Length: 171
Length: 180
Image (tube, rainbow over all chains, first blue to last red; front, side, top):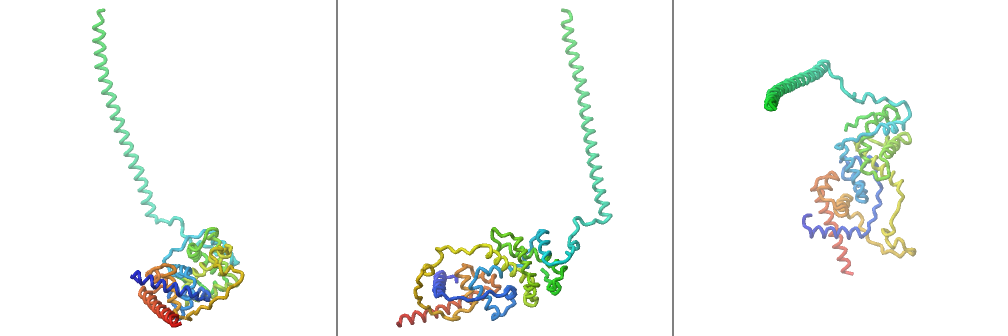
């Protein structure tokens, strides 16, 4: 089927066959037969009615493919109200589904809980110590600078002013 | 998916069995009908319709299931998609554009048709299916093999044998026409 010319000839031949207008009176096989076909459980003879029906309705091949891939496809999540509506179809007291529901948060063992709390406390302590030491350093630096600044201003500013006024003191 | 479920209890209409069945397969059914759903039809309604069909008339449909012939998940997928199609067909009015109807179907006085000679059973169902998928659906050999769950080589040989039959048939037909 790689030769384009041959493929075109084959296609023409098929069209010619189709033009004969063969009527296909095939009934839809039951779901169990289709499911067995999808799973490849039918013999060639058993598969004939299914294949005849599929030849007449090729769009239904997607059903076979979907059924075959059911195992590979993860089931979708369904809203609780959909389940409730479906379970109400059969009368009776609804079975609680609690056994199938996982707890929101699994219980941790005691030593794991202790480690978790200790880690949290240690983290808070470390953060406090770092914050305190940083704050202390900043305070020390700032207070030292202010002291130096104050002495410099005093010595320079006072002397210059003194000499300025002393020069004019005679006037 | 493991298909272990108490089918006998289910067929007897036992509530716990039904509830377990619904919880277990609702997701699968939703997944199966999702690709067939058209706009305007709620997926949840289709899921409900599938469950209704399964338990209707004293679980008549569910009782037809035979675990020795097919897996429950596979069977449910087929049932669900079939139900979805039926439901959508019921909801959508059947409208055929007049342009797509052949003129002879619209004519009031039916002209006598020339009876065509139809070769009975010339092609096997599988041969017809392979040719339909190749030339009508434009699928390639690999796609057909995956869809039918057969070897690509089987698809090629089926096609080859079908074509030999068609060539032979039309060669005879043409020869007969030339003699006339």
